[in-house]
Length: 173
Ligand SMILES: [Zn+2]
Image (cartoon, rainbow, N blue to C red; front, side, top):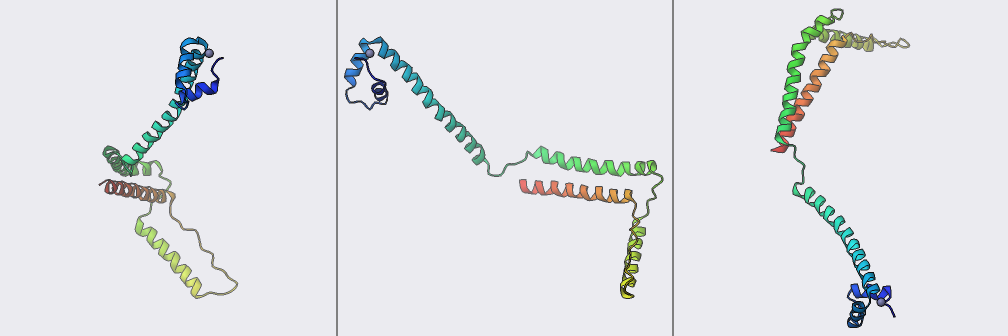
């Protein structure tokens, strides 16, 4: 009479009362001994699976609890600040060159633009004061050249970059 799979399982789990009987059978029966070895290796494999999952979980936990706030390396923020400064220098250096390349676009001074906007507002103000139905005031489009606008935008984005760099440095300290 061979051992059943159930008996072998219970033997491996140490949940069988008559271990001596089973051990004596295993000692005399190569078939059952072989089946036990197969079961044992299967159990070992199954045991190793949750172990792997657990160890990776632990690794993730260690990584996340090691530092609550991920910190950028110092050289990276330094590089970002340097890049912003370099971009600013490049923009300033390239500005006259770009203006030479685009001679068709006239570049009025900021005071000129300011006066234009002011006169526009004055126009609007007078139209509102002399408001008469049904003549709705139609504003002429603002005459700010695109180059000046794009330069102003580039300056604003550079300021934003530099500001961000400073903020990052403050956070790291
Ligand atoms: Zn047997």
